[in-house]
Amino acid sequence: MKVRNSLRSLKNRHRDCRVVRRKGRVYVINKTQRRYKARQG
Image 1 (cartoon, one colour):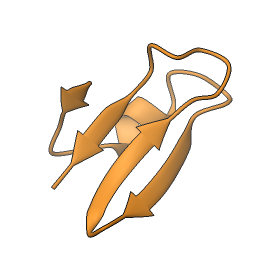
Image 2 (cartoon, one colour; image 1 turned 60 degrees about the horizontal axis):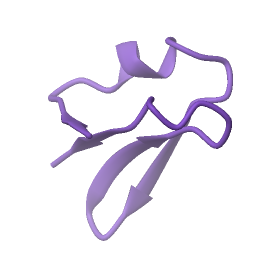
Image 3 (cartoon, one colour; image 1 turned 135 degrees about the vertical axis):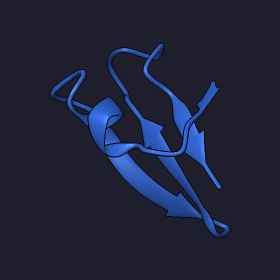
Image 4 (spheres, one colour; image 1 turned 60 degrees about the vertical axis):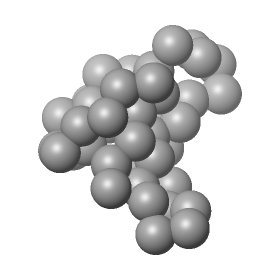
């Protein structure tokens, strides 16, 4: 999982990417392509 300071560019990598907030952190998750994962915060 990548830790990035900007997740907006990562959201555009795949059409199934979702930006999710959990426990004060922002995640990019993808159900179909599991390799697209990132965390912020």
